[in-house]
Image (cartoon, rainbow, N blue to C red; front, side):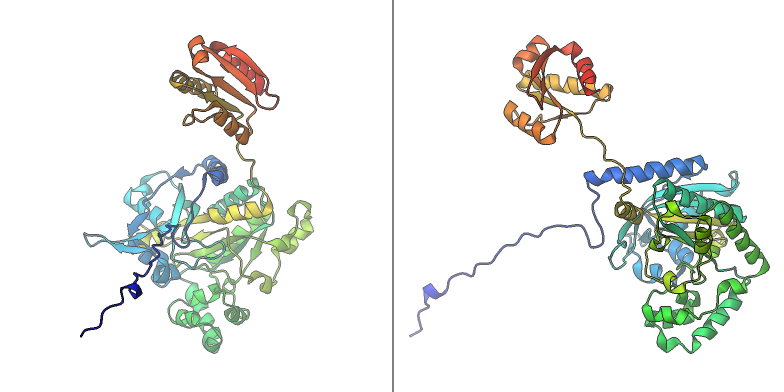
Length: 464
């Protein structure tokens, strides 16, 4: 006979139904209401400065054709090889979430015939960029940049203008210990000779560097100097300096930039290993850092500034730091993307990183003051009247808080107490019918009846 199943031992297994908690994707973050004031403060200040220097705003699409970055940023760059978010549309187009701002601006310059505008064309942009980078301090997969571009002039004065404006923004933010590291990487005439010397230096050191650098040796030798790996840093210390191989034009250009920075008192460090990681740069390249080694900038003497500018402590320069702004000249990019030969220079400011420095140095502006007036209502007629009163306060720029979703007066007053307002305006059914209101002092508890037509005047008087 078949064995009977023991029903008691066949209890169903309890499966915990865990609900998935949706969160922001890795490396991306929300900007909450309590933090928006800081972002708004930065943008208002930066836009005010660049508008004075006649920069006009441009907004480019977040999605661009992938080829713009492959040709512009560079096929062999880390950005293009490893970090781009790329998709294929139903129509077969390859599109990429913009990883940086310069190629899209140059594309717009060509597409809209800006070469016919009065030169130079001066543009600024602000918005999110996307890179599939390893999230860590100061590095996000969605991050924000504020950038400047000047197209149409090759004079070193435009390099200086870009650096000066960036320095001015940081100065107006009251940031301390900000220094620009600067170098020249030459042009297509003089750079090949330097690259040959650089490869000779690394030929017998390839076993001492990381795998990425061994690959760069074949495809992008200049990027050997851009690696932050500790063993690669040791190999680069004895590498030849590109400034020793500049042609007359590049040398004269760079000397003019440095002389002008001295004259306008922008502190800088000559960093012979700064090359930037993008293919389109020519001549001047630079990065802004927060340099704690500078001490309190308010007490620096002229001799200290000269010491800063002439420092040759390579070990300090090779420390792993995050640039808060970076840029340079790109005289061949417009032609590379299909336009006429047009010089250009620009900078991208990392907004996330600048705000991090502001918080670290305690340079945040004061938060906007919370409303000091709370409107309490009870009943349908009072609620309708509340909407009209709120509009009257808006017209005279008096912020008002309310709790229109709550009907109990005690609950509304409790909420007003929690917010720490100075006074409450109470309107019930009787007050609504008689066109009056009660003003309650939230600290003393004293109350006064005021006619509706004098309410705004009385509140304004009490707020002074």
